[in-house]
Image 1 (tube, chains in turn green, yellow):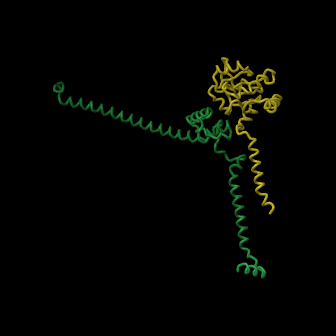
Image 2 (cartoon, chains in turn yellow, orange):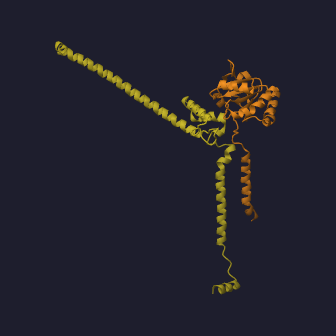
Image 3 (cartoon, rainbow over the protein chains, first blue to last red):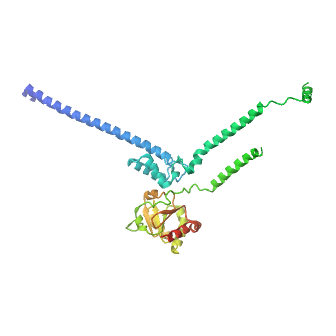
Length: 170
Length: 177
């Protein structure tokens, strides 16, 4: 009823106005939505990267109470505390090396599941290779000895032996 | 030729030697990297008192930091020795670190069993324990006048450990300026 009372030009102006308003709002909502989407994307990507680092560190650090388990495997009270500590340090932006050094300065090399190569662990790291080299040496030595035995021409049979051999083979 | 026959025996003796030494090592006794290093700082409430204590509180004297908790079974083993030593005046500056305990339980424990500690500081969430590399209660640290950790004992302090290890360390440190 009102529409009929208003001139067509006015109606179209109002409509255009409404349309513009709706479009503007839509654009804003769209932009906000995209921003939010990107942000959550970044945050979750960041979180999953941190999560991966946390899981890797927890698997590489030893639980000192149940000594043959990593922090990740252990549900001991101290392991929980140390895992909490690792999470805190990650969220503080510490690098993996810094976190390992933090643990090492408190609990010693023992806390690292992979012992560092240094003076007192040289035997541990190099021992197997020394053993392997030794075994290879012994094997080579034995093979050479056997070969030299085989290469020696056997002494020809004496006349007496030949006669006995023939007698037995008959 | 003779040597060849003895080689397996020699190998066996070397291996047996390693295993024998291994038998006598206690895997629970992880050497602390903190020995010879300054004691980590802390600022913690004092058990049963409305005050706090920090590292500076104990500066200038040789003191013993004993990590204990009311839930810790081995602490009951070593406690009578500490009570006796403090009563006889042999162990003067004994400070307790009440580790991951409840205040009420800890205070009841001291009332029931005696309190050999000059004071006990409360490490409710175990953060200071981590700084000190505590992984099993009880643990006992000897800290010198300059605040450097000089000795660490893991597990209950027995009379033998006191006489042979801790007491000589304390005596040597007391004579230092």
